[in-house]
Length: 471
Image 1 (cartoon, rainbow, N blue to C red):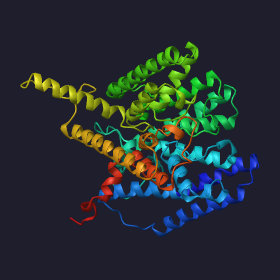
Image 2: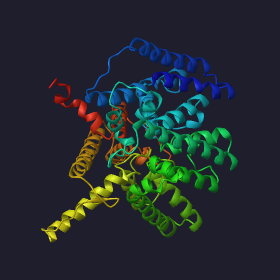
Image 3: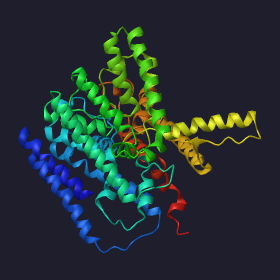
Image 4: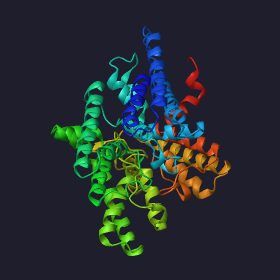
């Protein structure tokens, strides 16, 4: 993966030469250094023994995300985009985890090579580092399914695997690349420059939200904004499901209908509320209210973070709704952050089951998903993830306040980083950024991004003493 990352950095030489931004020496040095470190490690450990300990899967996943984030700081530091390591690590981690939070207040002044690097980190991170590894490396020397599920954001493990792990990953990657190429062409044909089309597609299909303009999507035509909304909406759907749709595999497609219906219903409810609030409360015309309401609701639900307007100036109930939607997120197996629709649906149906059991103690009321009973193990896991997610968010808010950030900013930043949404509240919301945060605050946000992308448990489990014991 370091070799791949090095090649991606070197790909930034294309805009560096085309736009003559003067960064080619720094980009070349950063790319070659990263590639050679990866090559050295590959050659040095070529004959390593296979390891069967499942704990290694958790360790490898965390190491890959952390190491790639660290090496991702090199283009920022070497080109002078920022001289602060904390800032560079924040931006790099935000890109790799497809969060979209930024420390740059004026991205239009950044070199073209850095703009492409930001977009590419989100495109790779949106798909999933581990999934990319499984797609590129035929033999990992470790149980592939353990590695696949350790990076929980890329896994949909509510049912049995009906195809081989390699086939599942290849299908997912194929759909991801196909949709990327398709939407680049669509945006290009809509009148956008190919440079804009590439960057917008990379950052929105990955549910990332980085932009090459200070006002995000506001400068686009209404048609282009709707096209971008379609990109974000598809990015929130399980990619295996998209593959089954493209291959007309209706039998397997039906096994995920519950999640899709919940995802689309949540979007419709949120969009209707936002449209009515914008038109009736804020004085938007109905056409603008429909456009802004639809595009922004999709952006929030998929935790993309792209903006069609300065949402920090919107009515407070709309902002609260957006916070709730970002916590929900899209479907499992998509590029989005948040809790995922699947887990929210299981939580709601488990509450319904408990209420029914209270009324009819002798009746059997299993929690069902796609007409099949959900095992108690999965329900317990969902409950645990929900509680850990809430606890980590609370601790993050407290730590941010202790670092000198006010309560509103702390709440917004913690939720925005752990859900991978990006924009927070206050100065970090809307078209704002995290530049004014303290250094310790930025480090806390960086950790929250990693925790959110790995859905907390993968990283937290490394701090359990028993994890390191030989027993």
